[in-house]
Length: 146
Image (spheres, rainbow, N blue to C red):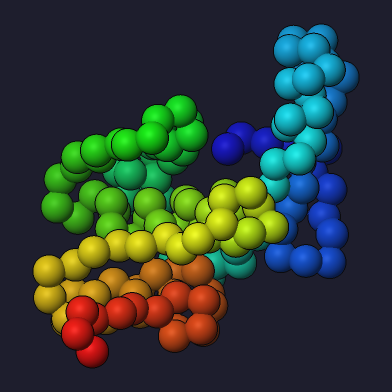
């Protein structure tokens, strides 16, 4: 989200914690700076090829706006053209921001619904590949009645 190197502190776990800065304190007071310092996101090591492919997707150019809308609303309907990256990229945005992990303050799961088994399996495989994680470990799928 356009953060500089000076804004992050890396720990041994897969999350990066954001530090509040003096600018945050000046702009929003101590309370806002304190709230910011407790936010974190998951670090993802993508291959160069995957990163280049992602950059070509329209939804990736809207990541900050989408994440702000998600944070500000209980329900969000996101519309976009076929192939714009909605199904594969939005779950990755959420994953990177810490959703689905109790340590982040956003416990639960990130779920994507697909109308057919083949779509569910191929979407899960693609997301796992893009996140560079093991398929069926951090990213999996569930077919109703199976």
